[in-house]
Length: 199
Image (tube, rainbow, N blue to C red):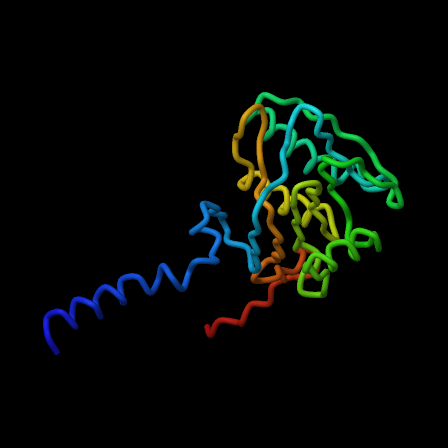
């Protein structure tokens, strides 16, 4: 092999990781910790501005309000915007440009997310979440308040300053814990048994 051929091969090998990873979130400026199981980025994004509201489904406000308040604090810290939090009936429809924190028990939310490539299957479980955003929607949905809180933690990392507000890139995310916690409660452990020591 000539020196020229070696240089071409070396150049191709140097570019291979970049070419193979064009669709990975980190190459498009989105770095998330921990990295979600499934991330699909698209063009555009959801604008968070002075008129944006956060909606939490009625019946879950006590548990889900923690996630909503955490998100509102992040928006205020990054952009100085104070977003209002409202309760919303499951069958209600949030106005355009609203952030919706929903439960996956809501059929309309599940069907909307499925139409956009986010399936709420058993893999999501109690601690997983789905996150979807485009120009007019920003939805975080989960089976439990804990899953919703984890989804909001990912959303906080996605928000970037722009103009007089923030932007969340157009994205579809499915994530769940790698290991389910199976530590028994202390009350289930009973008294420890000790082997008798030889005397």
